[in-house]
Length: 183
Image 1 (cartoon, rainbow, N blue to C red):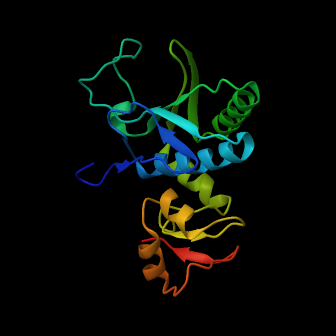
Image 2: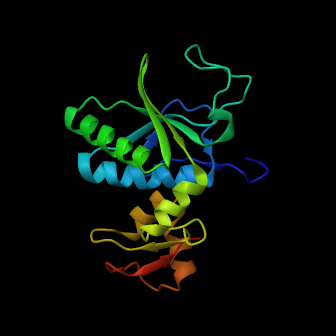
């Protein structure tokens, strides 16, 4: 993280972290979490919960293997939803992404969670091919219906004042389709 190879998973309106000792991942994994969480919240009306991210090699959990991918920053664990509709949605979505060759997901039983490894380059290409934000353009945000500067600032770990300054705004009025530069 200090060298800039890993970025912080801080949570936003779409996802939260719970008991994550080292909330750092590769940029592509962060992009995956942000996109998946937004889709999950739209489908389920609740936040996605990340329960693990990077871990030092010296920190082995009782249910982990010797060669874990967590130290690389490409893996996250997601809490298994209790709501059957949300569980079915998450299973379908992860399976679809796995079939696309951009992640590998395993549903673990004890404790119940999904272990997801994001393949950085294939995932970045997958997102770019679908017109989503690439790592190079991730500093821009397109305003959606119902968005507010406060909500956007909170989701992107910044402030309303910083958003207004970065975009030369004199008021907090924004409209759907407007593109904002994220500080």
